[in-house]
Each structure stands twice: as structure tokens, then as C-alpha cells.
Length: 401
Ligand SMILES: [Fe+2]
Image (cartoon, rainbow, N blue to C red; front, top):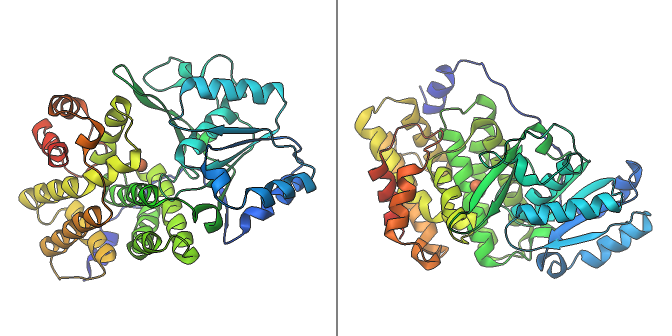
């Protein structure tokens, strides 16, 4: 019996999945959005975009011309850096004054998360800070403005997830989520024309975020048959489309395939949760201004090596190990016929990618070993299929210091 058959037959079909956005996928599909907005009856859309990426993409002029032709006003809110509570509050206040009737995000994960928070906070009083998990004490109601997300990077899958990460960086910083089904956009638009100008380092880091999300969701203790199908398919697509996007950013097929893989990673993580790498991403990102994708990419090989090693030591027949092995065959494109060798190939391939894509080290962002020790002592392994001690978690961090 094949590995996948064994994994499927062991499964008990009891699960639920959060809502999904509608989806438009394809080259140039961006230009159908103005007419779509008009037909939905919208007339003033808060347009939240990246600071530079929106203008650099080469599509802005035509897109805005079509908005005007469709009679859509689009007050523009360009943002850069992490989504802070202050930014969200300011955009929400202005969008409310202007009586925006929908929110449209064109940008990376930070832009989409800001737009999600704005769309919900347009229906709530006070600062968004009051509604953040672990920071405020209020819970946001499932009410929001209509929300469309158009990713300009292939990574976070924010266009599909039910949370928005809001952060403040520094000694007392935080990276915390707003979370409920209202944060799932109504529509996600995946257009390689919006992504093709994404620079090499951002493509590499955000792509590794997507790969991390796909792998962590697939092996998660909370994985479901639905998320498994999507995560495996996303891993298969990212295997060729991420390196191909990096070799030639103008390769629209590769850009489109990677955008779809990233979207799948968002759907998978929303239903299955994540693992130890994402457990470390929040505290690391709260302390220093390090891109989320860099944290994920730089830590994924060492984390996978440690988890696989621990599974091999504890139970070679475990479901967790079988799933790593299955993910390995899809991601590397070869099956060695035994779990240990498959997992070794997966780990080797991940190390090779991180080397080839020149993912930075943690020390490049000023982290010290004392800080990493502290983070290891307090971080969560989330849905990782094996428990890890603080010393083991520290060894993952130290490997990439
Ligand atoms: Fe992530």
C-alpha cells in the first residue's frame, strides 16, 4: 500500500473549514475589477496599496483609468512598513469621513492585513489596539466593509486567511492578530501582472513563507483532508514555480503558479494551523524589523531537520513522519521508498534553497544569542507533530544566528 493511501485510510472524516474568498485568477484579471466594483454598486473604494510597489508595477495608470471610466472614486492610502495600530486607526478614520463603501488592497501581506483591519474597524469604535489578541480586551464583531485583496507578493496567503497581523516593533513590541471569519476577504484576485515586478529578495523571502505555511499546515496536528489536498498541491507547484520566478521575474506562468501556491498556503493554514517556525516568527518580528518571510525561510530547514529527527527517534510508524515523507516526495519529486531517506532529501533540498536564494541570517538583523534564548523559552510549537524543548527550539535559532 502506498504512503498516501495509508495516510488517507487512517483518517477519520471529522472537520470544519473557515469560509473562503471568491477567486479570480489569471493574467490581466486585475483590469476586470473596476467593472466588477461598478456592478456590485460601489462608488467610493478605499484603495490601500504598498508605498513603492504599486507605482513600480506598470499597471497603475491603466487600472486607475479604468476605475475612473467605471465611475469609481478611489481615495488612495499608500503605506510602507509593518501595519501598526496607528496606521490602521488613521486610515479607518479618513475612510469613514470620505464614506468609502468598500476596501481594496493591492500589495503584500502587510497591506492586505491593514486593509482587513480597516474594513472591520470601519464598523467598530476606538483603536484597533483594543481588539488585538493578547493586547486589548475587546472582541471584534463579524462586521466589515466589502473587501477585495490583490496580492503583489506570493507569500503570506493573507488574501485567504481569517486573521490580520498588526504589529509594533521594539523592546515592548508585539505582533498580534485580529481573528474571526470577517477577516476573510470577499474576493482574492491573483494576477501575475501585479506580482511580476516584485524584487528578488522579496520574492525569495515571501516564497519561503508560502513553502513554510504549506509544509507546516500539511504536517500540523490540526490538518484536515481538505487542507492536506491543498497543501500538497501547493508544495508541488512551489517546487518549480518559486525557483523559476527567481530565475526570471517576468515569467508570468511561474509568477501565476506561485501566486496560486501562496493562496493555497493561506487556505491551508486557516484550516490547519501552523508549526514551530511560525511560533517563532511573531516574537522575532516583534523584537526587530525582520521580514516575516525571512524568518520563515531562514529557519525552515533547521526546524524541519529537528522535527524529523525527533519523529524518527520516537516512532518511525507515526502519522507525522508519514506526512513529512509524503510531503518530501511531492516537494523533491522523488521517492526513495523509505521515510528516513525521503525526509533527509526534503531537509537537504530546503537547505539548498535557502543557500541558493541567499536568505539572510538572524544576526544580519542584530539578534543576539541572549535574545534568542529568551524567545526559545517562551515560544509555542503550535501544531508541530512532536513536542520540542526550549533547548531544541534554541538550537533551531542558533543554527541561523
Ligand atoms: Fe507565514
